[in-house]
Length: 399
Image 1: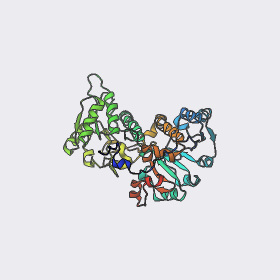
Image 2: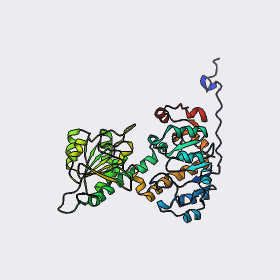
Image 3: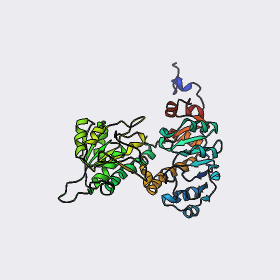
Image 4: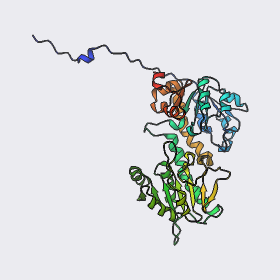
């Protein structure tokens, strides 16, 4: 008599490790939103409507007086939304969770309590080693919103601000062509019988795409340059029009720059933007033409680029108007704040639903990507490589 066949494989009959479900337990959050101290930073992370939603879900928020004024939101609006308004900066920084646009300064870090959580931008290229040493000493958990990924494996905060910067670059250029010193007096717009404005966009990423959208919407002729054929193909599909596209070749780019009225620099590198346009190429541009170097915060892709401020945004070199403000979205603080708040609010509620950030990063891999310090331990390889600081794999720390 033959032995009956088992419905299980040999591997299935071997003892297995028990997998325990991690409990999701809703927790109460206590969030502090300080007034931004960074020069010309006018944005705020949460709008009054977002604060109202978070407070109605059982959480507490303290906001420093005047934190939203420059973004167009009054203290009264925040108070009516359920936030506590205070003049005491130390009280705000004493909250378990600190929510900021710019990373905290060293003086602000001194006011933050040990084992707190900081959620802000990181802006790696502007940090110094002392910043990370202080985070480690205070055993702080820190989340950088520009590193957070969504379900599509993209960076939602970076994309939102890039969309704003790309759109704004064309609007700024249109202002400069009529208002700046030695401007050429041209109007963006396809006026009957008048040749349209010529725009060159260097870089076919998100910034480039939204600069192109705005320029086309105003009736300009647009030429796009990028070394990625895939990006050039995708950008034509995204804007829904046939564009003049080209890889970055000096001869073709120089010809286009000589004819253009506006040049937008929107190409980024790993550690800095590559210099694509030499000073010699700038010298050949038309008198009164405008350069908007959106990637100036990474060194810029025009050799003649210099960093400027919102108070004095332009300078003239070789009869070409240069705009080199690194933080373009801060020029439109209300729009930028609304965009940031739309992204932050769901994450705040998600963190609460999971009982805090530590549990939330277990469930949300994209949110986990944003964590660069965990209880005073560096967990981000990019920071480690940049500052030569030892780091630990986050997966070994939380599982």
